[in-house]
Length: 185
Image (cartoon, rainbow, N blue to C red):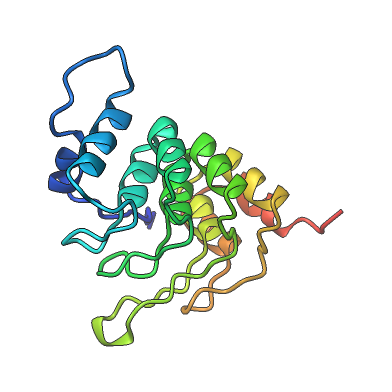
């Protein structure tokens, strides 16, 4: 049975991120961020869903938005504070969705490619998955290659004892599973 790992970013959060955007002369994502910051929102504030703007724009694949946020002080390694993605960082979102350009920006800013999602055991979301787990499970080979190049460790287990290669194999991504099981050069 094929199981795809998904991330929950509510439609309301994404709609709020785009609110007030109407022109095409400037990147709409950057415009929305500028408006939020002009209204006094701190670049690292959490919303009601436990997400920062960086989480939202990384999930959307907005390289322009992520670049703008990082330039304005967004912290690349801040974790989500609420289920269902408790403990995930912007890198987790980019990896799960295969947004390589976003991941490159995050890495350049110091994002940890081996950060394991550690949540709150009381709310039941404590999966221990790394960005590599999510990229492999979702079949994003280019992302897997980037993460490995940047030092991601394929031997890391999630809390269920699964490695990234196990998740790739379980989801039918045999080429990625083979890549992850190949000896390091």
